[in-house]
Amino acid sequence: MKVGLVLEGGGLRGIFTAGVLDVFLDENIHIDGAIGVSAGALFGVNFPSKQKGRALRYNKKYAKDKRYMGLHSLFTTGNIVNRDFAYYELPTTLDPFDQKTFKESGMDFWVTVTNVETGEPEYIKITNAFEQMEAFRATSSMPIVSKIVEIDGKKYLDGGVSDSIPVQKFIEMGYDKIIVVLTRPLEYRKNPSSMWLFKCFYKKYPKLVERWKNRYSEYNQAVEQVIQLNEKQQIFVIRPSKTLKISRLEKDLNKIQAMYDLGVEDAKNALVELKAYLAK
Image 1 (tube, rainbow, N blue to C red):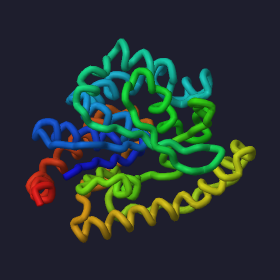
Image 2: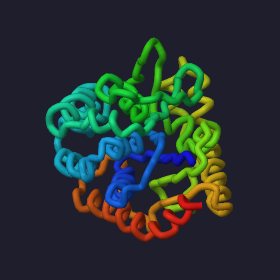
Image 3: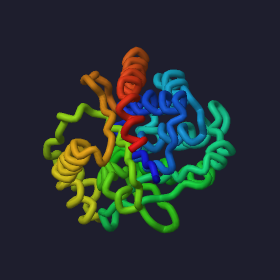
Image 4: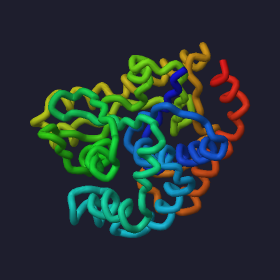
């Protein structure tokens, strides 16, 4: 049996996922492979490295630090999340990522990115987080407020543009059991996005513009697929049991803590059913 973990993004809503995965660490839930989108990748990578509490710790410590993320970073670097601080100084020096444990875990870890020239999702396998930090940056580079990230001659942006909930990808990759962690309540649906600003920024990339235009319907279809597969007990879904107001770049430490605590609570409440699902 091959167990997969699919992690939705959503900026600091993703701290819900960090809470869920910290419970999984406590319970020794076995995972063979994970695929993360945006914040789902950034926070989810702490699961194979077995760094319980790390995502919550550094987000609370640096949420109000202008070096981390926000308008200061956007206006001075062109990225709303500061490249050098968030992706290099923080994981190497300030709150080190445990690459050794990550590698020794034997768990496959993928990040979802969007190719801006094709508009299609691509999936990058992470073997060394430090050497592939640009892949983490690409998956979480929100359009308009982030520069395009180039890797091996290809141009990428946020994976959520093209595949917000990559369940189908993991089904195709042969995972028998799939745990999906969403960051919004199951009733949430997207509405059409305003297009004029996106078109202005990305007029050289018509396939990306078309993808953005259809993003809301593709997301909603993915949610419907998740609901149907969950009802058939083909996958297992954990999502917020209630709506908490938290922004993608939240500065309120109480809101960050509350979202994390909700992840812990909802994961603990799901444990009996989750273990039964995995045991089938």
